[in-house]
Picture 1 (tube, rainbow, N blue to C red):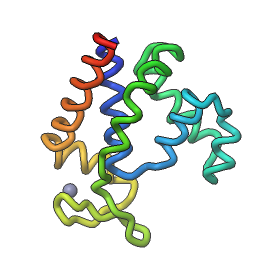
Picture 2: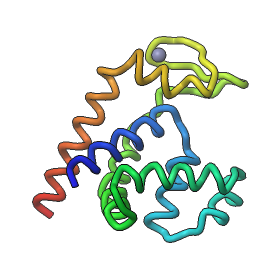
Picture 3: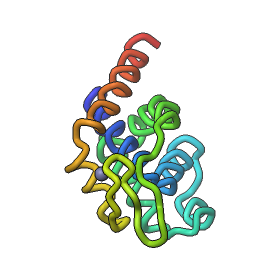
Picture 4: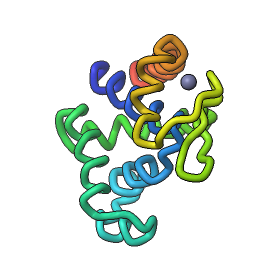
Length: 137
Ligand SMILES: [Zn+2]
């Protein structure tokens, strides 16, 4: 359970920091609200294939659907308090941590490589809160 929590926190924190709203709502609406991938895809003007991809990655980290749902339920409210650090500007994104313009497709790897310490601190804080909640509900 704790490994699943850490992996899912990391995934959701990075999605929030790069401001990938569709990935976050897709995961929440599928696992928590029970919405279907095609409804989610239609609502957010994306493909069903992409929606399934986001959901599958979280389920893989959890090991199964039931654990994924349980973990996302506990973790999701903590993700809301994180401010994105990437701003969209035309076709590019601006990393507000180092004032660098990037291609949107490079945002995630930029964050992982250049701001490792920053993201690890956030992940550590949220993981600790969530694990203590799971242990002492
Ligand atoms: Zn940066």
